[in-house]
Image 1 (tube, rainbow, N blue to C red):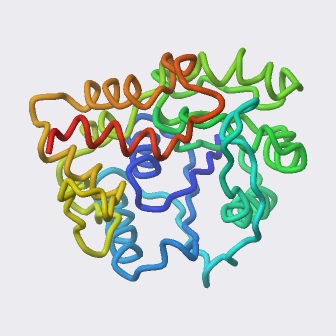
Image 2: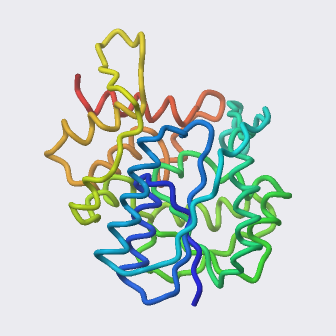
Length: 273
């Protein structure tokens, strides 16, 4: 079986690539492209070092690094969840999905692995809500797996039910009940591979209590370092509880809820500054 795995060097895609290399004998094809908001050389260097580590220590696979940087994208606001009032700019990641479509056409895989983890359930999945994107990415004779699923080859139907709200209720939210989160996935990685990971920010932004500058990615790093009393799984569960996603989604206020703000608030509380 030929399996396609998008790879950025972040936690979710690293876990996806490592797990399918280590736990299957499938023909793995992976690619990396650079988005304008993550174009730092250090991230590219770390990602390529991870690829080499996997080839050396797990097994060989086909890897392609796409040249150049994806375009910036346009402004396109969509509700964070169906029926919610707050929006976010989905246009900034539309070029990512357009590139994925091109690579799917080129590689012609039997299956594609999505590097999902629990915190993505703070949103209702946008590619399914945008009919054109949904058709181009998922209306194919290609199985779709989620790396954080307990079973490697459980195929997720992204086209049915056809109504996005029904799909969220019947497919997306139940899937969020079993998927692993970023910290559990990080815990699972071999320590040598985990040590190659680059932090998201170019510099550390301390949380000084004044809320004058709040960096979500630095709060994630603080959570990892400060809360050693919690396992990765427990960290993910506490974040989901306080930030009102996966099994806690119904507690969110449709008029006021914003996922990223909720996650930041949860991290500040959990870090106990």
